[in-house]
Image 1: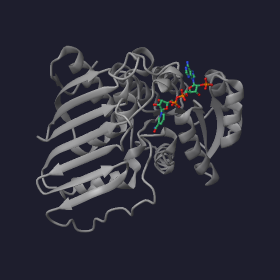
Image 2: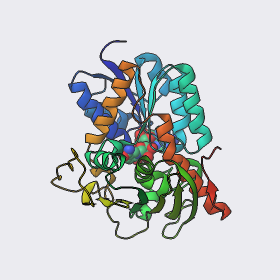
Image 3: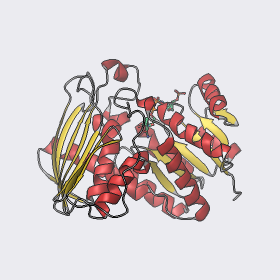
Image 4: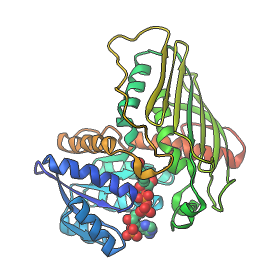
Length: 351
Ligand SMILES: NC(=O)c1ccc[n+]([C@@H]2O[C@H](COP(=O)([O-])OP(=O)(O)OC[C@H]3O[C@@H](n4cnc5c(N)ncnc54)[C@H](OP(=O)(O)O)[C@@H]3O)[C@@H](O)[C@H]2O)c1
């Protein structure tokens, strides 16, 4: 394998733009060669290739795989296509970085993990918030016991999306193609952070509803999670909460509280100081992703992609591998199950 890995992407929407922007940065550093981009609309795909510096544009995945022989394929297409597209690449011996949610159910997610292991390729999931300075600080603080015994975590994603947001998309708003709504699309990053910090969930009880849009999937959800370490978690997610508020993650322990709002550290209150741990510098402007998804800065995507490239070169696990990527999906699938049965659901969950 040459030192410059060949990178290709499927999908030219917001998600494809993020990961391709990150790939452009790494290409300028000499780490990647931007090979092919694949989508449906030829003119749009060519314009995308020119914008980010890809060599060629394709409308056929298999042709691109055959001609370009990429080392890494990023998959950023509608949710229901993650599984077949990622599987095709894996079977062609390509390392795959699949956007969130990893798949639309755990059966597919487990199959991707199994097939990537069998084929000996890396599988990563684009959950880039794990690379944010703010959340890294929260993780380190809680891991070092800075909050004492963890007792409560809150993941709150109260966003607003218009009916037009769903109406103009052919795949959003439907179970078969989006795989869910506010939870699986918008709140998944914050749910991922909650389980990253609080650990393995043991049981949850949830209710989801559709209250503000003409869609099949949920635009409102609430869940209570019991974690194995005894902590409780609360998940609130919506795309119907006008006018849309910053995402919030709160972690409480017996000796402290940390609150993050819109990727900014809002509050760190500790009964005792933690040696050698400094909060990250404040950013000039907070994230506005609850208003405009494209406003998310590329820094975290670039870090995630850099880690994935290094994992391929060094033949090690990527930081967010298939098992890590599966964790938020497992919670979300358990929430859907609990809401449809009206019963608590025990974890781990298999499908
Ligand atoms: N990590 C993040 O922060 C982040 C942020 C935003 C989105 N995402 C993820 O990125 C993925 C794509 O979302 P998006 O918002 O970029 O979607 P989008 O704007 O609808 O773009 C979808 C892309 O997939 C292509 N495509 C191929 N087959 C398709 C089909 N049958 N139906 C519809 N599109 C098809 C489209 O091609 P044409 O345009 O040529 O038709 C387009 O390039 C999702 O998994 C989403 O959750 C992640």
